[in-house]
Amino acid sequence: MTDTPGIVVTGASGRMGQMLVREVSASPDCHLVAALEREDSDWIGRDVGTAMGGAELGVTVTSDALEAFARAQAVIDFTAPAATVEFAALAAQARAVHVIGTTGLSGDDLKKIDAAAHHAVIVRAGNMSLGVNLLVELTRKVSQALGEAFDIEIVEAHHKAKVDAPSGTALMLGEAAAEGRGVALDDVADRGRDGMTGPREAGAIGFSAIRGGDIVGEHDVLFAGAGERIVLRHVATDRGIFARGALRAALWGQDKRPGQYSMADVLGL
Ligand SMILES: NC(=O)C1=CN([C@@H]2O[C@H](COP(=O)(O)OP(=O)(O)OC[C@H]3O[C@@H](n4cnc5c(N)ncnc54)[C@H](OP(=O)(O)O)[C@@H]3O)[C@@H](O)[C@H]2O)C=CC1
Ligand SMILES: O=C(O)C1=N[C@H](C(=O)O)C[C@H](O)C1
Image (cartoon, rainbow, N blue to C red; front, side, top):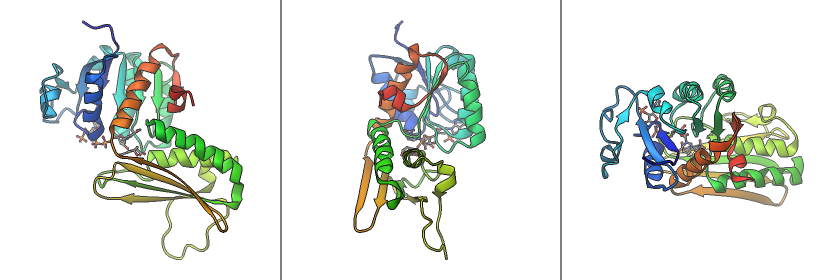
């Protein structure tokens, strides 16, 4: 037996799920207690390590979330909105820290996650990397300094399997840019241009999404002024940056009071 925090990885067969299983099982600071998949997944009942094509890890893939969460101190969850909302209620019941990387959550989903955060620690971020969370802070500062004389456009690029747009990261950057200007993002966001759009609206924060191939995740924040342009850019080349951030959040959350926290809290930004 080990006395390090026990961690459940949800969506274990997914792109992020597999990366998380690797990070958690390689870390000396925690141990993998369960790997979760859908009931009808052909990974159920198999050792998660061998299902991933590697060495046995001694953890059998299960679909019983509540039983798994009851044995864990943290749940790391990069799945899909419907699953994440369900897992938030179950993690709260088990009083396990819930680290949410899932993006594309609706306003209704976020209300349910808020309710779960009354009972347990939730750390949620559209991007768990150190670099992007620093970029968010820079975006807020540059937006505040420049004001509306500079037009803000956020351009993101991801792999062809991504199902939500704009990305969670683009929305975090948009929120920060809006905060820097003292406005609400919902009032100024321009999330898709097509046809006779007319000239750009003053004060708008524009979003563009590129999807293709195996792009891990790229984000540009453009501040376009008269005669000059500033571009803040983050390029992810390895999903390990998200997995390591999520693991850091799971460990950080162990001694925190119930509530909802961000990666900025975890990183002390
Ligand atoms: N915050 C961050 O730093 C990052 C966030 N993400 C986000 O993480 C999420 C997952 O991304 P990615 O790993 O690329 O996606 P994948 O599609 O590769 O993996 C998602 C996994 O979740 C499982 N899943 C989906 N719905 C359910 C459900 N209802 N019950 C149980 N399991 C379910 C999927 O199973 P099945 O295949 O059977 O549907 C799959 O195994 C996305 O929202 C993405 O935007 C990604 C990278 C970084
Ligand atoms: O789906 C992805 O892959 C990613 N999703 C997150 C997002 O929506 O911003 C984070 C990262 O860019 C990869």
